Image (cartoon, rainbow over the protein chains, first blue to last red):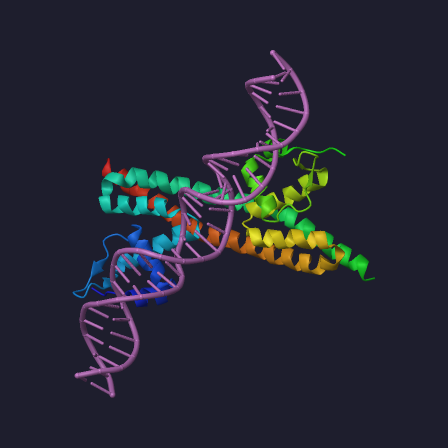
Length: 124
Length: 124
DNA sequence: TCTTGACTTAAACCATGGTTTAAGTCGTAT
DNA sequence: ATACGACTTAAACCATGGTTTAAGTCAAGA
């Protein structure tokens, strides 16, 4: 099996090593193996799980929730329903967030239009 | 002129009074007047500016940036171009954020579909 | 008069999400 | 041998965005 060092993973995902260590400490990256010297070994599986963490972080899931999700993955199939419910809720929060941002865009556009107009009138 | 107390504004916008006081302290609500007892008086103008603050906060503009914007409003027409540039940048950040959220939605949907499928196979 | 409710302040406190620092351990190339 | 680069840890530090607390002021009603 191919293992990646923390430096390699940091470079691949453009995430500081300090953040990866912090994520592991917070329980976002459970079951990371170590070599004889205590250095982290990221398996392909861990890299895939980190990809999920990246997805969750980019969609603003709190660290505590990501941790719960990862704990459920470790727990196995008994948590499938809860994981499904969690993903449905998270999807809804993403949709709500998109809706909020979209709703406020016209207000920003109005300010832009107003400033363009005012600047045009100022320097005639 | 109609003035609103901090309690009224708090109720209207569903924002804690502590947050409104914090916003003023941080410079997000400049030029708020006071009565003889030192109590804040929100004019219609201030309420309108607060509406802008709410818009910026809901679209994740940092407090420091909102403060800069409000300082430019106080400064007057000399800052019109800078305000326009700021609004254009902020709009782009909103669009980028919507794009990011939208890009990750399929990954969440895949997990949802996978869990539905797996749960269906588990309880046949 | 005295209490109550709405307000004031400064300062302390809190949660979230990390980064930085200091000290140390390896493996490898010179 | 030793120096270097990549890694380790715990603990301290930081930024952001507030909330909470303690002590006080003021106006109005019982």
